[in-house]
Image (cartoon, rainbow, N blue to C red):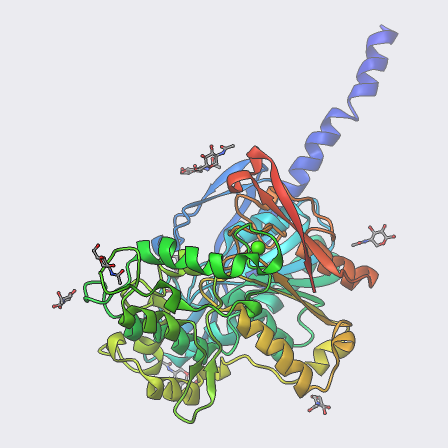
Length: 508
Ligand SMILES: *[C@@H]1O[C@H](CO)[C@@H](O)[C@H](O)[C@H]1NC(C)=O
Ligand SMILES: *[C@@H]1O[C@H](CO)[C@@H](O)[C@H](O)[C@H]1NC(C)=O
Ligand SMILES: *[C@@H]1O[C@H](CO)[C@@H](O)[C@H](O)[C@H]1NC(C)=O
Ligand SMILES: *[C@@H]1O[C@H](CO)[C@@H](O)[C@H](O)[C@H]1NC(C)=O
Ligand SMILES: *[C@@H]1O[C@H](CO)[C@@H](O)[C@H](O)[C@H]1NC(C)=O
Ligand SMILES: *[C@@H]1O[C@H](CO)[C@@H](O)[C@H](O)[C@H]1NC(C)=O
Ligand SMILES: *[C@@H]1O[C@H](CO)[C@@H](O)[C@H](O)[C@H]1NC(C)=O
Ligand SMILES: *[C@@H]1O[C@H](CO)[C@@H](O)[C@H](O)[C@H]1NC(C)=O
Ligand SMILES: *[C@@H]1O[C@H](CO)[C@@H](O)[C@H](O)[C@H]1NC(C)=O
Ligand SMILES: [Ca+2]
């Protein structure tokens, strides 16, 4: 039967080939021995994860609030424990996509946490990066394990990120049996700080860095955040300003004074520098009312929107920018200690008996003088990174509720003065984009979806330099073409499925 045999002859080489390709990657994954190449490491997970898997993360600390992650491409998942010293170790994750772009990427952390950013691992592997993440040397959202253990603080300050970068590069090259071509970093908040710290300390680690809403000047940032609780007092105190007053009364007044300064009434304060908010406009008249503030409360609001000065009269941290009230009311002005600052003072600066209600500018001086493991992160020189051809894309939301965007402006200007570099010259390796109407790292009334990380909106914008900060830094590094602006997208009710509401161009 010549017809059948030729059909069989035609088909046999094809069907097994497709199956073989799949098995090849899966087999390659399962026969990998990553722990053999990383000094003193031990294997926690080695697994092939097929596209579409809803990966369960039973070991992720419950306070990290992420028990699962949807994985949209085939990957080989490696999880190791890597000791950094005899009393600290890192939980390391490396996700190796089957469809690899020859790019390597490291993800950062947030807050004061030890939470691996699985959303960013999923987001970046989806775009072909071999991606690394970690718990930054401890688990969960407090600093408890840093108490009396400076090794954990060192991991948190810089060593974890550098360790996982070195280990990740080694393993990526081994796994694919080819050297990665370029190395990238993506992080926001604490993660933004980690990126700048890496550029300062390990200028060869990354070719391109995306640093969002960075927690720069870290000691002073913790002090600034700690300063609000003594101002607001506890939630049951008589003068306490309720969340409702912040989110409606005060926020509405901020908008009525400042939204229109940019010519458009849209809930977005285009340039918060132009908004010099006058809370006295809300002062109650002689007849008390619920839609106004007492003199004491007005003074509180004025203090919250003022720069924070220290014992010597020098600036500790710039003022909170107006426009951030809705979310800031839920954390910084909630009438309780701000958890990250409280944890930092209790377990790193002082001891667990410390009372956040007593915070004052002397505590700020103590924290800044301690500067454990030089966590500060306020570089006045990144010349080694720049000489390597490294590029940094900085961004910060203009209505940030956790780290005032005025601080990143302050850093940009400081760095320009310290290095005697004009903005035009800085543009060759460091560009800063303000994202009006963005809260902390994401969300807000503005066009805030800019490809800054994983999460619900990540799939909404194409991976193109015009509207994605990661794609923009890749193009800058690989093609030498830097973007002048980033188009940010706002989806209807922040839901990609409901379609695009509007897009705004964010300038450097
Ligand atoms: C993944 O699984 C978890 C729990 O099993 C579930 O809550 C979550 O909705 C699932 N995610 C997706 C995208 O299906
Ligand atoms: C690495 O392992 C060796 C041998 O087991 C041990 O002596 C050494 O202390 C370990 N180093 C670290 C950093 O854990
Ligand atoms: C850990 O290593 C340090 C030196 O790096 C040493 O002084 C200390 O005794 C070691 N501790 C333990 C428990 O082995
Ligand atoms: C963090 O959690 C993982 C998973 O439970 C555990 O293996 C690891 O030892 C923990 N790390 C630290 C520093 O406690
Ligand atoms: C407020 O609450 C704290 C404890 O939460 C309590 O110690 C204090 O007495 C309360 N103050 C007032 C004025 O009710
Ligand atoms: C206070 O209320 C009274 C009675 O409604 C009114 O006559 C008076 O004008 C009010 N005072 C001020 C300062 O608004
Ligand atoms: C920056 O650092 C480099 C090398 O570390 C040094 O050569 C240079 O002088 C420094 N620049 C300034 C302005 O201090
Ligand atoms: C770089 O430029 C080439 C040629 O224009 C283009 O094919 C490639 O996609 C670009 N790569 C990036 C990362 O933009
Ligand atoms: C968006 O949210 C608002 C307020 O919750 C709601 O009224 C509106 O119907 C939503 N729009 C759509 C298209 O779902
Ligand atoms: Ca406006």
